[in-house]
Image 1 (cartoon, rainbow, N blue to C red):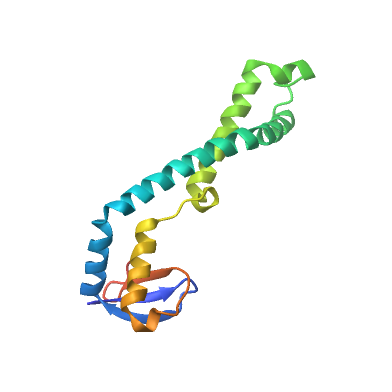
Image 2: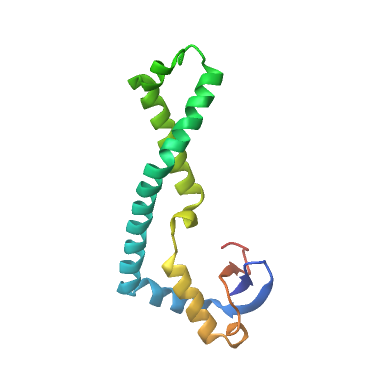
Length: 148
């Protein structure tokens, strides 16, 4: 059994034995410093999400209010209705939902990195002569069952 190594464009680079991949993966998963790095990265992503929420929420709130005015004109009948707790809560809920959705669909936008995968890729590039000059992420597919 072996793994096909593909670059980010889907070009087949080489094949590596399953045993080599498993040893490198096991080494990566047993490295304690990678867990520390990944945990710090998750904290940074959470901080970036909260910061973005405070800066983006007024903009999203404005557009949600515009949409609310177009969809439900009776909810916002005058300017004083814009500051009612019902409208503010509805707009804030929509804005927070949008931010959470963007975090889960585009985590790299908030600075998320998978340190385990990066470490595995760098180690495989070190031990495989064909991959020493390759830049960018690698993707691994099992040849027998074609899964990641």
